Length: 232
Image (cartoon, one colour):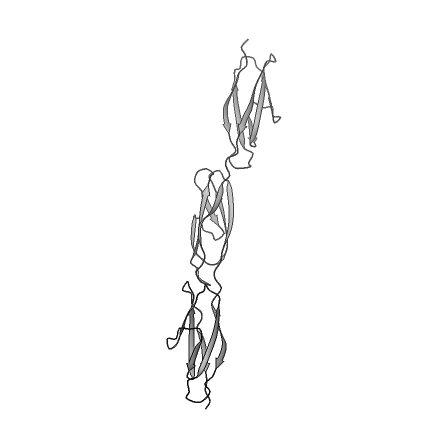
């Protein structure tokens, strides 16, 4: 009688992390049919499929009740498809759409497919306003990776007058304006009509004065108009 010998002809690992689609196929000599099979997961077929990652063994029995076994057959999980942020730029100023997000992907199989919640399908998305963004990455096996991120813009620059002192007597130049600025990205620079460059200005004649505030990133406030009056 010929002895019963088994060999593993194929082990297919899972296509995606956590997906039960691994396969083990075996071959053996066929001198004494029929043969029966008993796998460690309870299967009775020659070959097994839809396997999760793990360790398996099989025993084959021929018509003469001779047996042969193979143990420690390993089906591995494919490394998880991973996605992350490679680089990110937040909008420079309040209301601007000059942000971008660049994604990076590791593992998986074949070419990647990108699907952003903006409808974009590229790794890099540009001209973005502040807001919430999400990305799903697919590989050629249909494995998925999901990420979310947020772009944040500075608050708008707000300029308010803290105090306004009108001219005390007609024709004098002793008025003043004091202001306060918030938002944006300090420090600020100031430009009044008349080329004054401080937040507070003094020794003013009667008239209208306009202040524009610019922050460290070049963002500008809405111009503030302030009237200084004088007695008749």
